[in-house]
Image (tube, rainbow, N blue to C red; front, side, top):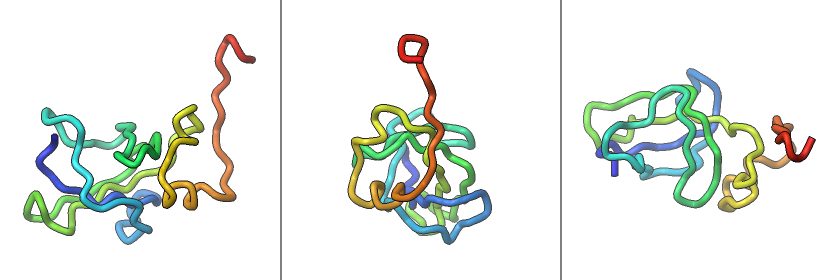
Length: 103
């Protein structure tokens, strides 16, 4: 697991006070922390989320460690998510990718 503890918030770049969808998130990879453009799934099963901004505090466990994410598409896993994430999706429009087998 990653060493930085993140507050994950759904918003746009620069919105470091966006609504929090999870606190205490740690990267699944011990090799690197999330970076801009990374796509991740949260432990509650929500996602995929794309990282659009971030900020790091002065400590690995600081409350200022913030990942700003946006829902990325409508993958099959997007329906398998926690209650907070389902509420966040309500009433939004999502990009749906079509596969060659299912035009």
